[in-house]
Length: 238
Length: 103
Image (cartoon, rainbow over all chains, first blue to last red; front, top):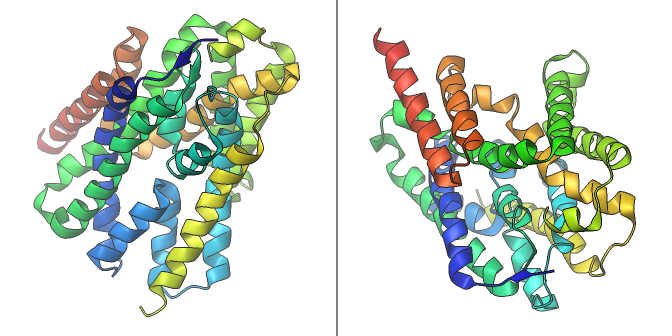
């Protein structure tokens, strides 16, 4: 299986994520300061967590003086999907990735980094991965401090439009694969149907969204793993 | 906010452990066909769940969000890059937002 291990290719693939993060982190910076956090506190949170949903959930807990247990459980529930992604990514790593690299790469294994690494043909090497995570990390921290310090300078209408950037990227990752591989398309449709059910139906919509993501994704992937198991060569192109 | 650093340590610690443990502990190639297939589908399943229906609430107005979503679907269908898709999606959402606000 071919290993992709070019630092510049990683950088190149990371740039769109970096731009997407600038806008999302910008919004986070505004949100954190509006909740009473200092700009340097918002920056520290972004630099040590590198996760949008978890950070957004943590700010009100911190601002209202919530308990540490409450904070820990919220982070565990919202971020548990990363465990799933890390298992998946572990199978995608090339031979050049050493144990020490795993400790560092795990730190910036975000939804988007994971998605881009997964969509490569072949395994991914350490140099590629460091290139891939570098600019997203910088974009995430820079966006946070910009939003925290200068958030009110950008017109509201621009900030709102930027909110869709990350989802546009997700679609750009999902759709070409779904177009080329019918079982993947069916998996996507099942996942979307389940996600909508958990979003709109009574009782189901009371389940925290961190759990919802895991339940829906595991169900959709498991159903398709039984209905349409992939061949070894297909799997390597995942 | 004297215990800010305590909060910071707890949230960063939990988030990192969730990401790090599986990546460090699962180091062998998985051979089981079901597990391999499951892991093959997981990225697309997770991204789909995170995108829908959340994308329709991403801008605060479903009309501009729908415009951005349709743009993203169309450009992705024709194989445009992540950056092109994300940028066009934002521009379409902005255009729709302007139309909704000033017409």
